Length: 343
Ligand SMILES: NC(=O)c1ccc[n+]([C@@H]2O[C@H](COP(=O)([O-])OP(=O)(O)OC[C@H]3O[C@@H](n4cnc5c(N)ncnc54)[C@H](O)[C@@H]3O)[C@@H](O)[C@H]2O)c1
Image 1 (tube, rainbow, N blue to C red):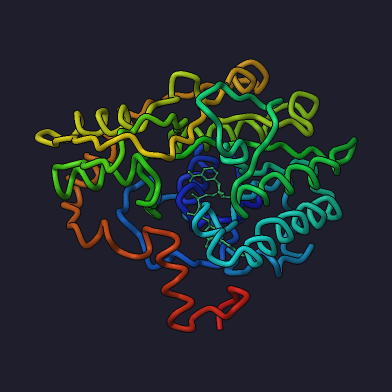
Image 2 (image 1 turned 30 degrees about the vertical axis):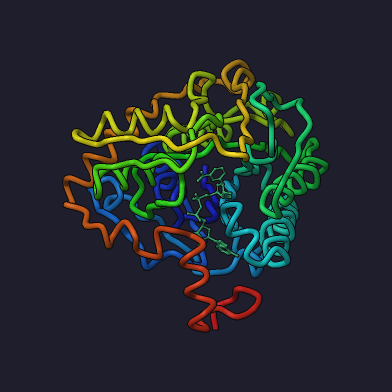
């Protein structure tokens, strides 16, 4: 199977490509390269498997680009809430318009399998209850709205000749060469490494589901190879029930993996939006899928990487590892135009 992986130079994509190649799939990558300034570390796995990649914007893909591919794993989007709020109209053009157009081109080229990386952020502001794939969505940002719109529009295309699958990922964590330090476990781990202190500004009571980046890769892999009838048009929350944590528990777990790290909590915050997600469906209905890692494993792996590269504080703070900072830098230096195309 040859898989067209969009966003292959992103945090998840940089792990996904070798993950799929290591399981005998061929990968053709696509990425416009917004975050290529950042490469945290190399290891033999990544060096042994760098896929052929088209340096191209998602919005300019043609059916010709997809020739010879059997499936699409679509990750290339503006990838979090603050980034989506920076210019919501561009978020809609890339994340909603670009994704639906890609699915249409894939179907027109005879590609049947289309795996889309959605997000648990579609559930929006909850009050701590368990939510599952049948719960109402309640998107709070342009980013989350677009995820709902893509699920709706590409979901309608499901049929005998097209098999889309929607993976609503929890917040990811764990090492990737194209690191992100703007997601909670990675951020707290880098803070613990560089300062030995996690000072929380609130009491950390809200719930957050988290999932290891390689478990997301496993979900993508299983969605690619599953029989069509098991997955056609289905939505799966990606994670594990026991990996719903309160933020202060995450801080505690991280601190325990970084000897000498102290955690302090602040006063209760007025904003206690919080949700827990049920991951029963993916374990029951996606053949072969199981989560392998816990938050503690992720924090330990991150410490091992930071130790290996002796990561300095300026690397943690480097703009390319915080998606919004890098995009703002590319905007303010005129490297990308008002539509986020390279000049
Ligand atoms: N990381 C998480 O916690 C998480 C959680 C839920 C869902 N997701 C989703 O998974 C996907 C990948 O997330 P990530 O963390 O790897 O994000 P990322 O920002 O690290 O990677 C996204 C990649 O897409 C590329 N890209 C963005 N716009 C593009 C365009 N117009 N044309 C071509 N390439 C473009 C970027 O250059 C980047 O390399 C995203 O769709 C994201 O919404 C991520």
